[in-house]
Image (cartoon, rainbow, N blue to C red; front, side, top):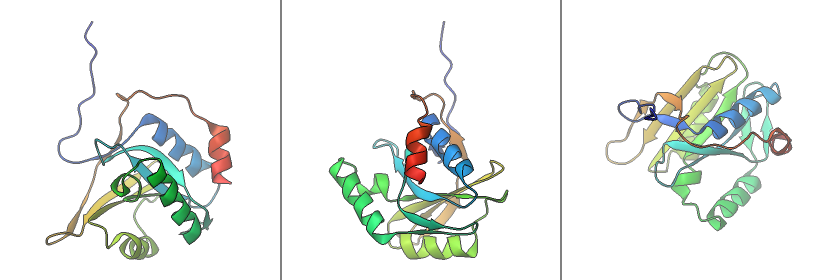
Length: 171
């Protein structure tokens, strides 16, 4: 019996492993504020998010502000784990507690300020109703940006969810 694999959408798309997607859904629904973090990409496909990592942050229903020291510590841990910056520092992942995934003015300002000097970066938003927004911005050559389709790649192997660990990370 031949196993049928789902086809990748044509052109670039932002894909999540099933485990990363489950974790993101859990974090979105665990509290009533926005929550943000970094997407950790595959070393072979930088638009495949394999994990979501949170850092200490101050959250409201309309914003997320990362703690600078926590971000620095996160970067140190990722480098120590053998990851390259383009794997762990280019995908900003956050949630909106409402049903609209469109970036707010604050989101746009934050993305430009924090990620505007990197060669490229992705802003991803998951809204409460499941709607998504993803945009790849690049800052080399003439620069530009493109919205990306979003999918969960269920063809990837995945283990079980760890709600207890995710709740601890959220806290």
